[in-house]
Image (cartoon, rainbow, N blue to C red; front, side):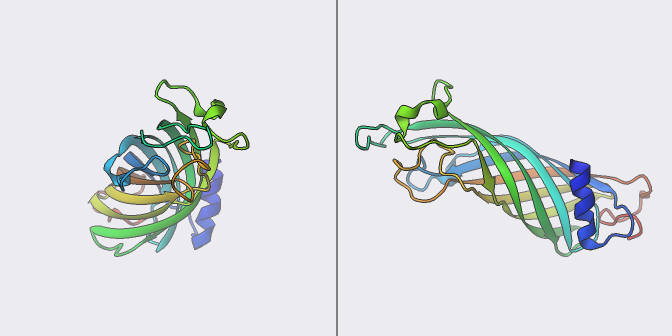
Length: 228
C-alpha cells in the first residue's frame, strides 16, 4: 500500500524517472488540548512517541510524504464537576497512532539549512483510559446516555520545520505540528466538558532522514536525486 501511494504521489510532480527514497526516523513529543486542559497548560505537558516518514529525495518545491507514528498524552482536572448527576472522568491516559499523507513545500533547497511547511490529511486512532488502565469507552457512566463514539478520527496535520544537511545521505529535521481532529472524545469528554470544539494535538519532532540512493557519490549534494 505504501509503495502504491508513493508511486501515485510521485506523478504529482511529473518525475520522468524514479527518485531515491528518503526515510525519516524520529522521536515525537505530543501535547493535548481539550476538556481536561486547565489554565492554558496545553504546552506544558509533552509525552513521548515515535514517527516514521517516507518520501522521495527530490529537488522539487512540492514533494509528497507519508507518515506513520504513535504517541500518548496524560491529563487531569480534578475540578470538573458532575452535570445533571453525571460525573465525567477527571483523568485520562490516551494512547494513539496515526497515518497521514502530506504535501511538503521545501524552501532554500540549495542551502545546508532550509525551512519547510506541510499540510496533510490522515487518520488517528485513540484509546482513552482511566487511572487504572480501564477503557473509558466502555464506561458509559462518565458520559450522557446518548454519547457514543468511535476510536478513529480524521486529522489534518499542519507542520513547520527545518532540515539540516549533515552529509550527502543524512539530514537532521526539527518539526512542529498542529493536529486538529474531528473528534471531541480523545479524552472521553464532550457534552459534559467545559470547552467547546474538538480536541487537538500539538507535537515536536526530532528526526534523522536517510537517503537510499546507490548511484549517489560521496561528493554529491544531499538534496539531489538521480538526474538532478
